[in-house]
Image 1 (cartoon, rainbow, N blue to C red):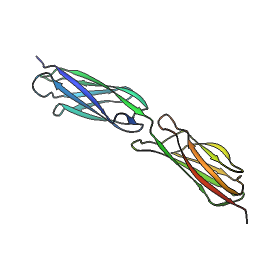
Image 2: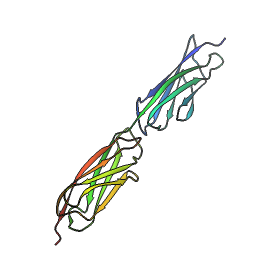
Image 3: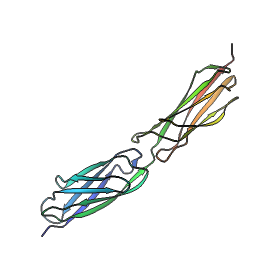
Image 4: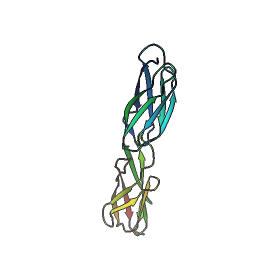
Length: 196
């Protein structure tokens, strides 16, 4: 008669950041003597089904990046000639990644009437990975400025203006966030000189 088993499954890291891989580890504990062998099938809700082979009663698999939210995990030990199958369960929690936003302008200083290009770059904070999407709101202070919403492409948003008046213009780039990434902001200043 096969010996009963208990399967435990752990998740690391917990929670995971958006874009981060997760390691699932199953430990099969015999309710008797010996060491279980064979395979464990991991079924991840909203993710892949993966199989690992036991070594010393444990096995680990890596799950690539999952969407933000809670993902149920079942670890099904398939049994062997001496040990009975069993199933363990856990949950992978995935949260939005923090970001940083930097903003620059060129040329700086510029001259009155010349076009100035503002560039905002949004970067995930480790351990988060991936490319943020969505929009950036550029807020340009002083005469000729305003608030302008621009789309991100490859993590970068740009804005060109030729309406700025003479003087110093405070600049704020506000990344508005998306399903996988949290908002962030960056600041800069732009100087406009009178034309020669």
